[in-house]
Image (cartoon, rainbow, N blue to C red):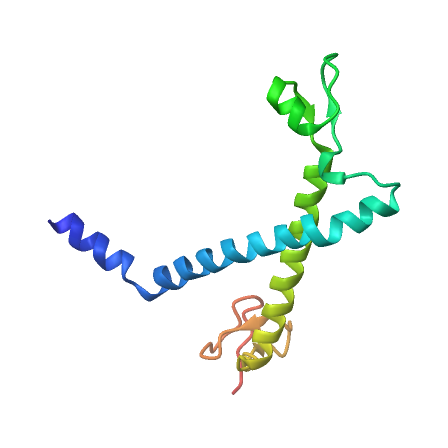
Length: 144
């Protein structure tokens, strides 16, 4: 019973719940971005490249002739699915940009940290503790 209580205390901490909500929202956002890349961004890029469906762009790694990625998967032919990899890279870049932009906006609202007061030795210019009476670097007697 003690372990269950410890687990409950751990799981109900604010940070854990916030993180779980973030993972769920992030997962949903990832699906939206994947759909955006696959259905909105990649078709025009494929059209500009001569009508190629990039999600179906692959390199077969065996001599078995296949014409589509689905056919290769059905036959168990090993392939390098370059088009799917490109979709994933574009997904990542869009998500990374969105996270960067969101954090940049959030940081505007957070209070700025006051710069720490740093004392330096007047002789050797090394940082020292404000309560020090002697410099730990050059052992000079400090005046206050």
